[in-house]
Length: 421
Length: 143
Image (cartoon, rainbow over all chains, first blue to last red):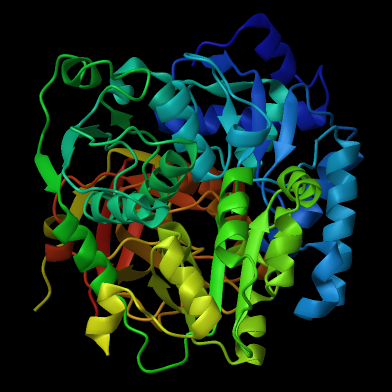
């Protein structure tokens, strides 16, 4: 790999031990992927909380902080595992909560902005076309690449931290034009009226094409999606397919036409998604006769618009006795929702709105599930329906209105739910 | 019947790490330490996973693809810290997270298979992964 004079100085340790070690990691990763050089980034987003890092990661961060490491780019944090206002209510482990506090202090000492959000692309930073960033959380990366036309690979926690310390990343994957071209085509014939429908598309496309370098090109979309719809699509593609980029003809910046999206190449495959395919997705979930007593809106965190709609759907109603409804969002959105009255309406209906966290990474989530006797988890997030199964939840994807109805009544009135009875 | 070592070897496209030898676990399904693994015991916990119930400690995992999220970047390091990490990952296709995480944790990782490993390696075989030579070979077949 070709290194600049500055990078050589970094490698010699002239900019500190932490920078040296960070660059060494980046060079090894770059070598693996055949990168020829490192390229500067403007913004870093990293995942770092005690649930994902464990004691091993925490001891690493403490060591790096003790080397007087300081991020040289604006660096924000992803959703974390503790909302300190709800520790007791969720009965989270006090020792782990203390570790989380120490971790946050360490990160701040290193000049990290602990914003604790997985929707930074909606609330904090919108990179421009061609801008290089180093983002963690797959949902943020696929959004940056696809919707903004910015350039990022999945930068996992230690890799994002390395980018923050060196201000650069190895140039491979989605930093290169050749990997940004579409590889297969998806004709969207379905109506796609709910956020869950977009997530279901992500499941259908991602599950059948598990490959980071597969880039679907969505074509013939019937209606222009908004930011929340693209958010659910992207998060789901990344979750089921490990994908980091998609195009949507006439919608995303690198796809003014089908031809442009494929960069002159041809699709390896053409698939079509219809309303029937979506119904099959919904029908694939089964409550197994257990109660539908847990409904979660999370993964990614809710935008202000999602909060407003949810407040409208819940207005004046009450979550069924014995059932729970959780919402997760960022501190910024929660604060705005409070001021605008959405938060009160959700809470008055019995909903619990957590900030700075995502439901699936909550510290102790498996134990919380067991203690509450939860079996089923109903959600409008296809990503959450996928990822939280590791904690032995039986998940059920439903459209937003159906989720709210289940929270209020315990009854699944969706077509798929009625058939399942 | 044992076949010769040469007959039961394949090449990999990219590789990082020390040469290692250990018991193979061959999975027909992709892997994520977030989605599929109990990160306290090292046992594959996702109900219905092709490797459900398998303990990955000190194993060489032959896996077709990487799944999901960025958390693997920390998870591998923590597995190593807890002493329950696998010795190597032999991926068909992988993603940067797995690579970043494995390199950060100092775990051997490879990507790309020159031949179909499902015809060459069975779970329980002792295999050797040599990143420098970019080879994976069965050194002792399961009895």
